[in-house]
Amino acid sequence: MKELNLNTHIGIGIFGASANFSERWIKEDNKLKKFVENCKGLGLKIVLTQGTYDMVHIGHARYFEAAKKHGDILIVGVDSDEKVRARKGPERPVVPEGERLEMVTHLRSVDVVYLKALKAPKWNLTKLICPDVLIATRNTYNNQELKELKKYCKEVVVLDPQATTSTSAKIRLLQIGHAKQLEKALTPKLIETIKHVLSESKDVHIKKK
Image (tube, rainbow, N blue to C red; front, side, top):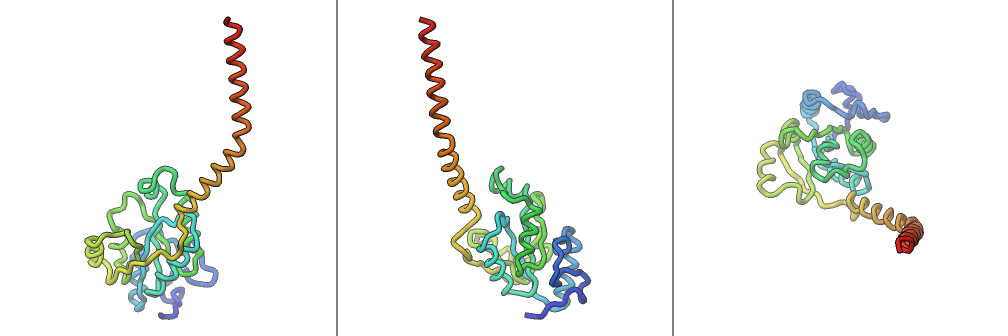
């Protein structure tokens, strides 16, 4: 891989030791496209991957590291809160988009992040930058989609999960833990409340007689 000095060659100061999140998050399509064109003009290989990255964990870090090995510049598309809710339900994401974007940039393999809007056209980011390599996980695309995607990128690489953990699994564990704590905390109070209600009901019944 080529040693990067994009501060000098491209004019976007994002790859220094004190990398700035606000600069590494490229918001406008035209700026991202220009950035990619400049990188490709220098002979750099562009890698793209996309996802939610809710509650960033070791699997995400390993995934980005594996993805970066396929090129020089790793661009990560992060789903907006609205897009995540539409796909995973009203309780997701746990972590809001601004924090998810910033957390991803703290992982050393990631060079640039981009926020993916719900109403953006299908495969908008892929078509916008036409990466040299598109990284995906299993079950993300079917065989027909993989064939179509090759119109917009030179190569599609499917990676296996990089850890046994997942965000959904972590959320389930948290929910189970909270439920158990809640059960322990509320059971005595519920018992007392039930006894009190039954007692009052009994007294009312006796008075009516």
